[in-house]
Amino acid sequence: MSALFNFYSLLEVLLLLICTSTYIYIQWPSIFNRYKGNGVLGIFWKFARIGERASPYVSLACLIMAVNQFSS
Image 1 (cartoon, rainbow, N blue to C red):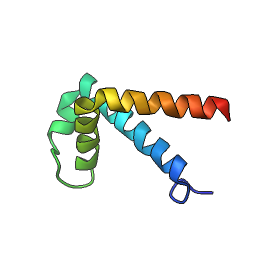
Image 2: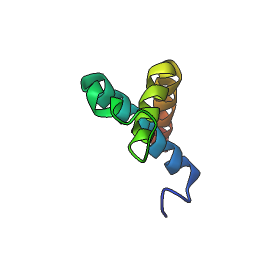
Image 3: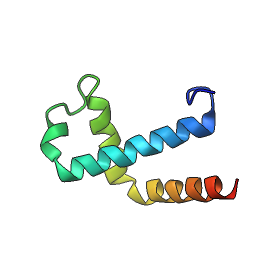
């Protein structure tokens, strides 16, 4: 089943995108600063901003996903 049709997998993919975009933005901010919300690559800038501003909630969601994955 595709990640688009399984809600749990879609959440997992979104969390991974947020975490990866935030990490890349912290290491190389010039990559995302060029796009700042414009076009397709602007989506990754927005994911990085979500990861920066909501980092406690993102990390908690990652922990919950990991425990849920481990227990099943």
